[in-house]
Length: 140
Image (cartoon, rainbow, N blue to C red; front, side):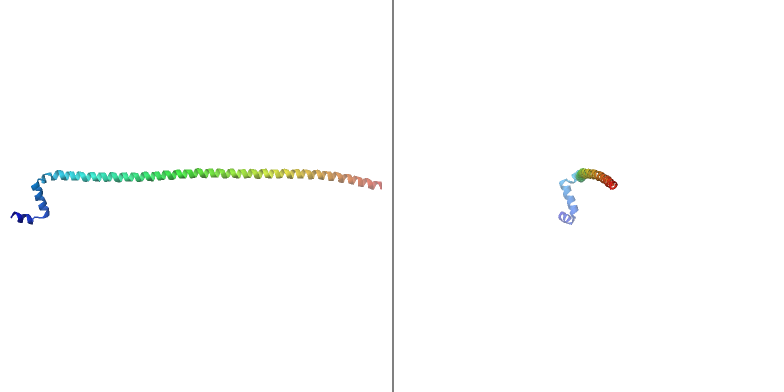
């Protein structure tokens, strides 16, 4: 009869009977509490892991942003240096052009002075020639 009774039992009932025989049913409460604590600890560990992973990702993103900001600042400085060099180059060439024009102006002034001197000499010669021509007409 006992064999038939055992054969008719469902797997869950059979497990319950084995637990009663081995006296593990008494440990069911502490086991379930320990199992619950284990699951909570695993959940807390998973939460901490995900939180740490998120922080690492955020730290990496902040590091990349800082590097990008540093690159931008360096490029801004480089741009400023290039603009300064360009403006200095322009000033240098403007100064060369000014000096060249001043030299040309000086040459033109000297040429004008020479021509004015020639004009005065020619005017003087013309006046003398007119005086001589007038004196020659009077004599004739």
